[in-house]
Amino acid sequence: MSRAAHLIETPLAKVRDEIARACAEARRDPAGVTLVAVSKTFGTEAIEPVIAAGQRIFGENRVQEAKTKWPALKQRHGGIELHLVGALQSNKAKEAVALFDAIHSVDRASLAEALAKEIAKQGRAPTLFVEVNTGGEAQKAGVLPEETDAFIAACRERYGLTIAGLMCLPPVDEPPAPHFALTAKIARRNGLSLLSMGMSADFPLAIAFGATHVRVGTAIFGERARPTRQELGHTL
Image 1 (tube, rainbow, N blue to C red):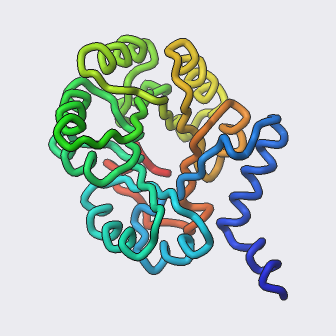
Image 2 (image 1 turned 45 degrees about the horizontal axis):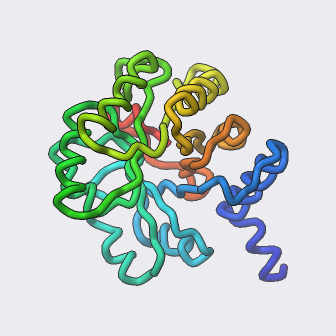
Image 3 (image 1 turned 180 degrees about the horizontal axis):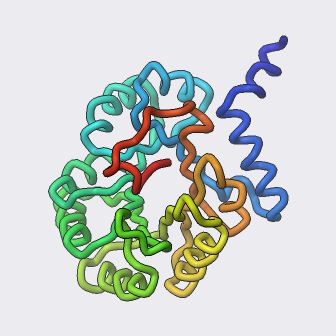
């Protein structure tokens, strides 16, 4: 088997190929879809080969876990972009602003206020997504759809935050398409261009509904250990 043939068969290459096919079917430019390789729970030994294959954008669920492995990886590899795709506690805003280039889970006033203070202090401005709880699930983070417009307005006007897009995570027991469509609709009416939608099982469909960021973990890194009850709201 040639080296080129081997590379085509890697999980990362397969995901990239699926993104390209989904974009072709949706008549979209693949350059408009960012692949966030979600490396939560995986150590450097699993991440290094993915970096070596050219991936530079990664997602983590927890600030503390990211702090333990990414500073060293960033020193060894240039051009790394780190996204926080899990829930963020307000008391972790300082560390999150310092470490992450994008935060996908802005979902309440206390967090918006804490992020605004740290962005001003640190002079760093991560790309911010408001998380929408499209299924109204009590165990999940996120702003309810009917409250999202007002929350975005508060982020902009009260806290001076630049909100770039929306993120959603559809209920596992429902078809994702209506949730993707609802998220895209809310984004359009609020003038937001970025949509963080789609995971390993449904990212091609999310692309059809306009996703600009797909959060793919299992399809790249393999199966994870069974999540705890608290983690279920952000399983990727």
